[in-house]
Every structure is written in C-alpha cells, then in structure tokens.
Image (cartoon, rainbow, N blue to C red):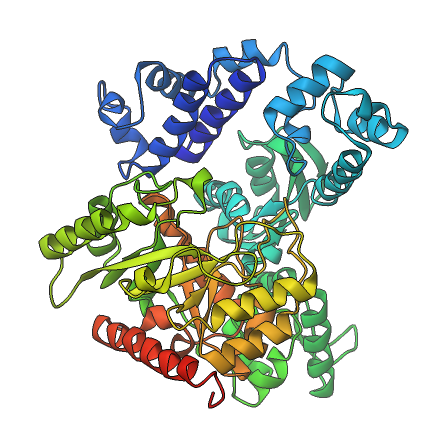
Length: 592
C-alpha cells in the first residue's frame, strides 16, 4: 500500500459516512485526514512509527487507527461494513459530474437507484422527476453527466496511470529473467489521459518474465497469455499489457510500442525512402523477407541510423516531429532542472493543508527552488475559504514574516492571489488590493454556462487588467469529469500575445490545462507560459512534474516558461510587465 492508496481509503470512508447520514464533523474528519496524510512529507514507514500519526495536524485517533489497519491489511473493516448498505454502483455513480453523495443517497432511498444503468433508465423515462428536487432539466443534465462518465470509463489521468505503472515496472526490473524493461504507449508519451498500461521487456527467458507479470499481487485476473504478450487486469478494470522480446529487438520494440500510430507510420515511410524497413522486430537493410537485421542497441541509435535527431517520447505524436528531427530543428525541451520558482500555491489561509512557512520551507529546502508565490483564493471562492478583503493585510504580514525568516538574496516568498474573474471579466479584488501583490493569477471558478462569446470576452477583459500576470486553468476542464467550457481559444491566445499575459499550464493532474495541443501555436504567437502546481499541500508541489510533461508535449523550451527565470530575473519581469500593462491600459490598449 502506498500513501495514495491509503488516502483513497480515507476519502472513501468520508463518502460512505456521508451516504449513511453521519454527522458532518465525522465526515470531515476522514476527508481532512486524507488531505493531511498526503500533505505530510514524512514517508509511510516513518508515519507508521507508534504515536507518529497522531502528531500530524488533522489526523485523530480514529483516522490514525484506520491508516494503520489499511497499511497492514490493505482494507478497512469499517468501510466493508458500510458498503453493505450502499448502492452497488456507488463508485460509478460518483463519477457523474455534480452528483454528490447526498444526492446519490436520496436517489437510492426514493427511487431504489443502485447503478449507472438504473440512473440512466430513470432519467430517460422521467421517473427520476418523482424524486425531490429533480426537474426535467435536471434529468437532462444528469444524462449528459452519465454520457461523460461512460465515455471516460476505464481511463486514467496521467498521475493515476503513473501510480499504477511505477510499482509494476519496479517489479519487472527485479525479475531475474528481465534484461531491460520500460513503460511504453501513451503513458510513456505522457498523455494527459491514459487507457491501457503498456510495458516492454527484453529477456532470454520470456516464459519466466510472463510468470512474474501474471503473478503480480496487483493482478485481479489474467486476460490472455501467449509467448510474447500477456495481459492482466488490475483493480478498477485497468488493463496492463506486457510484450517480451529478445534484447537485440528491444530498442525497436520499445520505439514501436511507444509511438502513436501516426508517428510510426511516418517513421516507416522515411525508412522506406532510405531503402530500409523498421518495425517492432528490428531495423532491416531492405524490404525483402531475407533482408539483414541491422544492429540497434538503443532508440537514439535507431534515430541516428535514420538520420534523425533523437525524438523525445513526449513528441512522438506524428505532428511534425520527424520533419523537424530530419532538419535538426527539434526544440531543447524544458525539464525539471530548468524550473527555478513555483507559483500558484495555496495555504491554510484558504483551502490548503499547510501553512505559509511549511510551503515556503519545502519550496526552498525540499525542492531547491528560488521563490514561491502564495496565491490563495479570493473572497468570491467562499467554498474554498477565499480570503476576505479585510484579511489581506494580515495574510500579507505573515508572508512578509516568513520571507524575512527564510528569504534573502537567494530565496523569496512572494505575495500573490488566485483572484476570481467575475462574470463580466472584472476581478474579485479591486485594483487597490491587486496592486499590493507581487503575482496575480486570474481564474474562472463559476458561471461556466455563459455563451462562448461571453466567456471569451470575460477572459480577454481579465487579461487587460494591468495587475493580472497569469490566466489560470483557462478552459476550466476537469479530466474525466468535466468538459472545457465554451470559448474561442484562438481569440484568447491572440489577446494573451497582445497583452503579454502569461498562460498557465496548471499542473494539477485533474486539470493539465491549458491543453498541450495549443502550446505550440501559442508559442509561435509569442505567448509565454507558467507551469504551476496549483498546490494545496507540500506533497502536491510535486504536481510540477505533470506540468513539465505537458510543456514538453507542447514543444516548449525553458525560455517559453517564466518559472525558469532566476529570482532576480523573475522579480524584474513581474514588475516590468505590470508597468507595461499599466501604460497600455492608460492608453486604452491602443499602442499594444
């Protein structure tokens, strides 16, 4: 069991307790414990030392006992007992957007709805409108949500896929019969949504490797097994496929099972023009069955023999990367070592799980960054503990105290906000408050049902606010849960270029927004980006890794990302952007 696995059990406890009508204090205790458990930087082994869990703020006696029980046995007796009186399809029903636990309990009690199929039938027949508070319009919305839940069934976010794949890869590499092993497929390309998990291994004894894979403790069943491929089923109906090849075929097999269909087709076409043939079995000198197999020990060597720059896995989507590699014009993609400062971090002043000092200390000491911007929610986001205008001076005083204690020439704690964009594009805080901030992230958290024209104008007006540096999670999507709202992305990107407003790559694995498919076009327009973790705890600052993956898929280099500026350069950039935008706003943006 990992910390994430145990936190998932705690969250399930909260849902089950809420379903059965337990008081909200108990429900929140388990929900808060899940968040506190993940926010605590100590390892699981350290936390399981007797008495250590109770020292963590937010974890009480009952939740500590459950954590220890789950860590030891992999299950919770309380949860198993509570599941007996809940809908058999509770997990599926909870995937329907805006269908909360209380509403599911109501539908279960009033209409006997147990599953997604039964909910759909009740909506289509109109029977659902006999339940309190459900109108015909509400039934239509539920049907739309059911369609989304079905569309994304069996799919994983990038983070979920990595959490599932990484321990499997570790076990494969421990297998004595394995020479080399790696993840492949869309996960290796770092797609934001992943279906099946793919693995490639090399071995002189494939049968032994298949035994290891089929015998994994995570496997709930073996779907198929053959001499070169085995498929297993993991919890939540996630499929994992393993292909085993001889080591002399490993490089070409790994490339083949990593690249998209379009990428592989284009690479084969290039090889044919060079009188070569490439597939999962190797690189061949000619197209005849008797063609000699050329020695290829690595993917880099494969690209070299095809007269290409090495193409990073993230770019293997068939979107011009082969032509760029042939011309020697692939970008030097941004990576973790380029990242210098973290922005858009929440603390316990709004809905975060850690204090300003704890977040700042982790940014400096754990991650080695040069600056952090504290960007708690603004007042309108009351559901997220948004900071009232009158509280801003106190919060900023605490930021200044932490900055004085921890900062200096090599590290700074910056004052910021994630300020809500109101329905007309105005900001939740007045300019007089925004002017006191070092960094302003402007985001939409409400009124998603505006027309495309209204939403586009709303975002652009926010960009023209002289105090706004960054537009946060521009499309509002939640992966596998909520589609992007309607707006004109091209018009927004043009406005970002015109106003020099930075577009956020929100690295929360549930968002990964702006979509990487728009990054290359935006870069060509001169738009800059900010990779932000939207961190609500110390642990979630690790989200930066997912944002970097999206930036790499979008062909971005360090010069395209403001977080890659050193401290002195970043502070100068933020001040200069504000001065420039104030000048433009005074002139009505006529000179931009």
